[in-house]
Amino acid sequence: MIKNAFRKYIDNFRGFRREIWILTLVTFINRAGTMVLPFLSKYLNDDLHFSLPQIGNILVCFGLGSMVGSWLGGKLSDKIGFYKIMIFSLFVSGLMFFGLQYITSYIGLCISIFLIMVVADMFRPAMFVSLNVYAKPENRTRALTLVRLAVNLGFAAGPALGGLIIMNIGYKGLFWADGATCIIAILTFWLLVKEKKKPTESKEEKALLEASRESVFKDKPFWIFLFMCVITGVLFFQLFTTIPLYHKKQFDLNELQTGLLLTLNGVLIFFLEMPIVSYIERTKLDKVKIVSIGCFMMAISMFLMLLNFWAGILIIMMLFMTFAEMFAFPFSNSFAMSRAPKGHEGRYMAIFTMSFSAAHVLSAKIGMGIVAVFGYQMNWLFMGILGVIGTYAGYWVMRLVEKEKLLKSDL
Image (cartoon, rainbow, N blue to C red; front, top):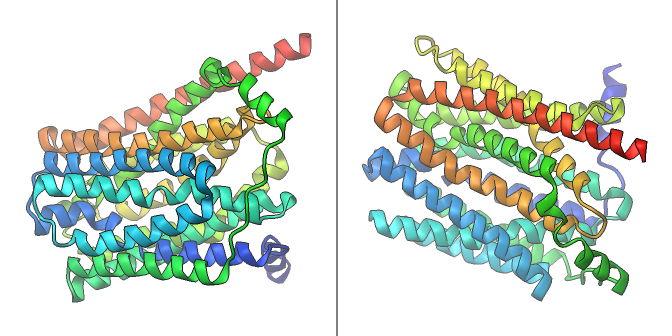
């Protein structure tokens, strides 16, 4: 039985082109090396002694840079090609990480973090375009899942390695590791993968795209759904903003212990997400309902943090957050794509991607602001209530989509 289950799991990884496997390896190297993010708030607080509102503002610059980078990366990928953008993004951001350790002023870090994220997050849309080009048409969805698994496996390794580096070398070691892995990853890609042009659009496809240009702004269910996605993002990004600080302040956890909790998240996702996604797709469960359940589980994880007298609650909280992530994120991506008219997918996905960058901005600013004025307990309460509001928004979308189906069936 175990052997059959293992074989079925492995079958999901067959049939990919060589370029996809190399892209997956590059993504893993890059993601495992992204050690600065989980410890950025602790570095700013412990080493540079910034106040919580200042840390919140720096993390806002992080999110704003991510939004600009995502938009710029998509636009330039269409103009000059994804291949050049991917190489530029990782190579230059790697060099920028080397230099970031020498900037210690508040204004300097706000500007530097913003610029680094503009360059670094140009990689994301370019990478999605490359998947569309290198993957076989019938394998594109699985190729995206494969890359997401590489991201999560890297996420499992990165925080634990980061914790060890901090304990043995200090925070500056993170910047060297992050920069080096960016450069190693993209040099591997450049040496092993040759540039391949993106398929050109036909005149008919261009006409369809132009005709549907305004449709996204009239799609009420899509915008309410985006509101829920922003809320799930705000709750999830607490893992990288307020929660690492809370670990130290409330339970006196060191960086390695915080890293191991984040590693638990990555390991569970790597082994369980593919089977869960496959099961939900086979049973054809409502995608919005699944995302709504994920949002509600995130709310529960925040409410659990109110129990501040037992460190074991951090493990239970992480379990709820991890399963919430597995329900919310893969299917939110899928629902957003399903709302897009033919030939208009890029516009929908660009707005969808930027919603998570916006969530990063809001998560840092709101979370740090509440903690600074009212304390951690009030932040967990606020975030939990926000998750309940997001869950209601999800069920509102479900009702609107059902009405749409009824109207179409009447016609």
